[in-house]
Image (cartoon, helix red, strand yellow):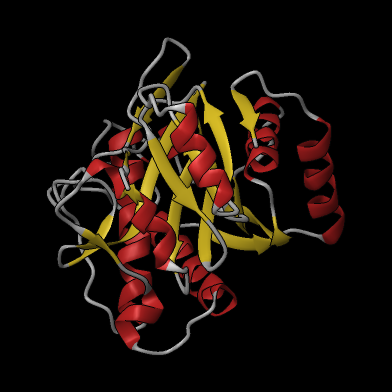
Length: 276
């Protein structure tokens, strides 16, 4: 059965900038800013963390991100999981037959005007959407470097030797454990990272993850040979994010989370089209 070629978020428009490639270990990024983008403003004193319950439909999460960007008041980190979902980017030209095949597997298929081709999100994968002012963290290159470092340190907490690669994301040897795709609108980031915790990796067999046919995909659970849930990983990611970005992580109130979910359900997003 033919597989669908994929890649993550590789486009730039007048309104947005997308950065998906590894910026490498040579980028000098001090905690809270500096490096990779000239002089940086001070990092936010705190980042509000929204832990969304259950499985959040990808389209709803995208709508919520756009609303949070449009109404930005402070840096935030949205953490969630999605139901099985394949998303198509602008450079993806899969056939209706292939789209139907993916849907028959029980996955949602969404079309997005972001760059790139196709990727997968699903249960057991921790997805993080930082809504932050990128210049405060040294610019796009330094910001992406910090996201990579956050995930590398998270893996190290579990005894996993992860690192960067010329390809996108964070890797354990030749297997990708986390994907990174960042879009910036009016200097505020959205999209973010996806870390495989106890993801069913069989979903990736239906595509070529990130368009890299000769490398694999892994998870924290696979590396450790035991079940490691998203719930176990979340506090580690929060701690590492705060340390790497030089900020304090503050849990959002239930009212704030409720309001964010309402934004997801009530906001129309011209950047995405649902196909089911």
